[in-house]
Length: 534
Ligand code: N01
Picture 1: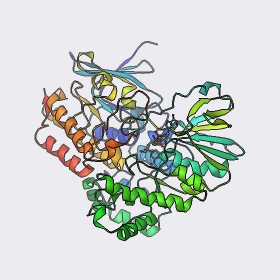
Picture 2: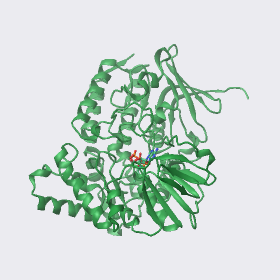
Picture 3: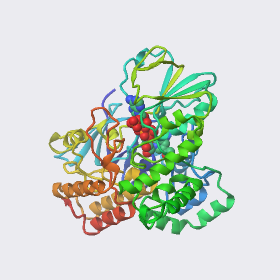
Picture 4: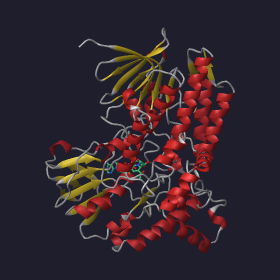
């Protein structure tokens, strides 16, 4: 077939929360726009993450769009923490309500995007050999969407079935009567483990780093709560957009050590009983001071020893790093699951996995025979999905090359990068993104990008590009802020430490959603300060 070229004003990659709203806004602004997604449906990560127990850890009534009051009032969440099928239904509902599908091309992956300096347009290529010429190139690829399947010798020889939580089959995986092994105890593993344990003949958990987890205390919403949330829409919208993390949660007004031990136990105990992430924000310095952090870390450790009956298992499950510096986890019956007779825990830090054999997993301590292996081994976060494409800016320099494979990520506001004109990244590195409730920060990016494009069109500006000094300043500011926290002191997917050979760096703006949103608004108000407009 002959190579076709499509001409559009804008190309958006990804049909998740970011891409759907970007499409809605740009279409409303009168642009010709198309969204591309490799999946055959909308949903982004919620399309792919269908593993047992998959659920969001942001509260439902905040984990949605706030741009349309009508939409907010038409949709009703069932439970406090939304499960994956409900989120996927919600995003399908959004796509239908706003008739978005005609402008989405599914089952199409973007392979490359190259800026053509003579035409000031992006030449974008798909895996179907289609070429699109677009004025604006916008990525909505998600921060944690490129699966990390560790390079363990022998996977191909395994005779059983294996799955990654982020690429789960659409049909139910039947664990009944099976010997299942799961590698990984991050958010995905902690959610999947209790559910798989309920079904499997035996579940072996291969744990490298023990995790802190706090009960979610998920439950159905009452009718009263739903009515109240809907009635309170405008105030909720105002609060979440000005907040630190995209919800109405309050951050404690004092440092942890200002309270006595007994007072702290009461505060932490109440947060534990209430469930969710509140325990991390009881005090205002839990992520900034080692001593303060130790108080909450120790509280959770003591809970693990209360819950887990076998002392040796409890010891193996006891974490040692600063709580919250790896993404905080909430669960339903995680630690309780280790009291079951059909669950065993293998410490692969002590006895590392050597290989996957035809029969199962062999560690330095012995071989575990398995019918199914589940990889809950996470993602190449922040830059993984951007680097999967060949994005070439001015002078043919690739984004990956410019950012030295992640070692020197440079952005302006986490949305743009010098040398990549008319390109915008929704929730890119060095924006607040994953440190809170994603839909709220996504909406802010989408609205800022739309306003920016409207401004360019009104002022007949052909090209917008971050100035190198403005971006250097922003990256420095992000780094300095991060260094005031404990985040940079612990290895996690936030720092890239989970990916073999990946350069280490903490690429998230930690100053909070509200202050960040204000900064972006100021820059726009000052005629896009820090950008060259030509
Ligand atoms: O991935 P992770 P995830 N051998 O990277 C282990 C979001 N999310 O998919 O800690 C043995 O957190 C690794 O061990 P270690 C959320 O933002 C949200 O669970 O590196 N083990 C770790 O235990 C979350 O943070 C929700 O030592 C290996 C695990 O695999 C992010 O996605 C639900 C290994 C990976 O944990 C990622 O979560 C799910 C190896 N070679 C996800 N390689 C909710 O909203 C890795 N591990 C609730």
